[in-house]
Amino acid sequence: MQIQTIKTTAFNDQKPGTSGLRKKVKVFQQTGYLENFVQSIFDTLDVPDNATLALGGDGRYFNRQAIQIIVRMAAANGFARVLVGQAGILSTPACSHIIRKYKTFGGIVLSASHNQGGINGDFGIKYNISNGGPAPEKITDSIFDLSKKITEYKIADLPEVDVDTLGQSIFNDGKFTVEVIDAVQDYADLMQELFDFSAIKKLLSSGFKMQFDAMHAVTGPYAQEIFVNRLGASESSLMNCIPSEDFGGGHPDPNLTYAEDLVKIMFAGESSPDFGAASDGDGDRNMILGKNFFVTPSDSLAVLAANATLVPAYANGIAGVARSMPTSGAVDRVAAKLNIPCYETPTGWKFFGNLMDAGKVTLCGEESFGTSSSHVREKDGLWAVLFWLNVLAKKGMSVEQILMSHWAEFGRNVYSRHDYEAIPTDAANTVIAHIKSQFPSLPGQSFGGYKVKTCDDFSYHDSIDGSISHNQGIRILFEDGSRIVFRLSGTGTEGATIRIYLEAFDPEVKNHHLDAQVALAEMIQIALKISELKERTGRDTPTVIT
Ligand code: G6P
Ligand code: ZN
Image (spheres, rainbow, N blue to C red):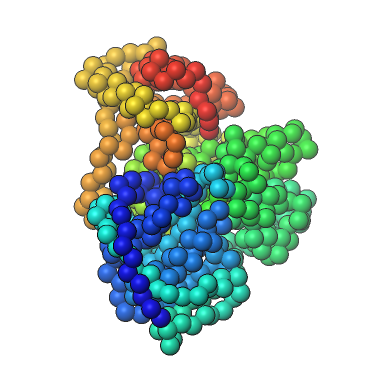
């Protein structure tokens, strides 16, 4: 095996965002672009002898080409073995599980998550460390630093590796192995250990109807194995389960806007199924629906935490919970009642890793349709779906009844997020600057029935490794516990996306049936007034409301 050292020119735009490096496919196709970033990852790491790398992606356009390049670069950079998902495909949570189960040194996930795919869509790459979770900021910062200075990369002369046939390909007199694995079985086995499959099986054979939408993305084969083969669901309860390189031309983001086919089925009146769910491009997000009923991700986390002991894996209780700052405080109320700690972290799953490694939290969640536990170190879409099925099987109530009784017990944190996508970056920055300029004068001001208590730009102090992360979102906190949060997305690839997160607490059962947009109408107007968003961006309405 010959190792070539190739001269390259650095790019200045390889800064990883909320979840790895995401760019248009065409950007990744530039000579040396992928190679530079991969070499910067490997140069950041101190790769020990006999190290194994896990590798796979969500199957989007450019996945296969990238896999071949990364395998050859891993060989040239001292890895002894690469574990590749069959056909180069691994869902993000499955990759996290593979890293943990096979104790690999780390893993590379090729995904732009819920962003559109295809030749004109996005591609992405991120590195996960040996705990199975996304690399922390000190690693991603170093990757970015090296990417700005890189002058050469290393790549081995290897023939095209067959990633479709299970088994090993051995190179370099046995010093380098590529092993293609069936990650679907590994992942399904893990789910079967965690959840009460016999209770779920019974529920699914009792006339209870579910509908799962894989959105033409990575979870299709996993859903087929788990729901149909192992749990006996009918084939018709799955939709869009054959992964495609451009996700069927759609936008694989499980929310009320982009999962519209499923939403139509679930909001069709009495004939709708009892339970609906969808997952995103790389399988880490989830959306949960009941018959004509939407469960916000923030409420979903709270319900799972409150009912965790119904699931075999959490039967002895949970150590603690964590949520990202913009996620509603619904889970905080559950934690208070269970007398367990609740942590508030910045947006991004990577901030949960330390807390889980230290055994401080078991369940984590984000408003951005992510929920998971310490069984892996990523969020996990199918895990959340199975958790809900397990709870539904044990409680014998509908999704809506579960939420209504949860709110009656804990009160309702009414919640919504309004996104304004693809705004010119300058305009977005002036909106944020304008809000910040009012920090000194906002406290004490009243807007209709709401009086501002404090405002700040959220900073997080990681109690485990001592690191501090600044500028994680603007919070305007009102006297009655309501709040408005403004944040710029860290995952977009076109201009800037402003997210407005709105939350108001309502203990009154008589209001709990209200649509969130109605219940939050006044807060929405206050947010627009303080930010001058319409005036500064020329936008009249959000592009996505969740
Ligand atoms: C990715 C991350 C999540 C994060 C989400 C929202 O999905 O894995 O942890 O919550 O992006 O990011 P954004 O910066 O776009 O709001
Ligand atoms: Zn994702």
